[in-house]
Image (cartoon, rainbow, N blue to C red):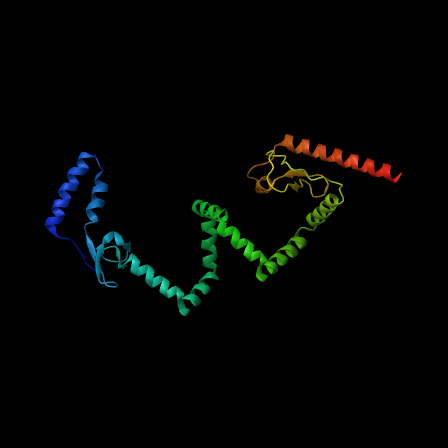
Length: 248
């Protein structure tokens, strides 16, 4: 399709005024060329209207380097096809393909994908969607499969967590209210196990510090580790001493 210029007299006046203004403000020639390009128009056969070339997507395979339809018409056509039965079937096939999974993996690992994913997870819409999924039948089934798989892969961790939770229920271990890493009270304090063969030796961490420790983002200082474990062992010794005295 041909790109048609507007009225030459009007364009000439605008170009002269624009050039004088840009020269006075020391604007680069690239910006001036972009401003002048906006005066050019192109005809969209879809909506039968003349629009600025900025309202068309770029297309390197065409003669003028622009898509045949304007942006609004292109978006409307894509949405109409996606909502059709044929479009939905093709979209579901693409979602199950290996190429889609690979593209998703690359996007998640990119800087833009990490930023987008982090902002979405912190949004109220994402938290509400997670709660709805966990309460749904599909979410419960997925949780059961994940738990069963975790038990098969990490039987030592499952046994360690079971003994640790039983010790808390019986009062053998007292859960503190302050995180050992950040010294703040951030929700429920978790017991982090540096060694799963020692279920009663833990480092008390909030949810944020616990996740950072497992991801290796913010490792716990060695001084904090040693101090917490020594206090935990002393509390266990005192509990066993009291237990022996009561039985004797």
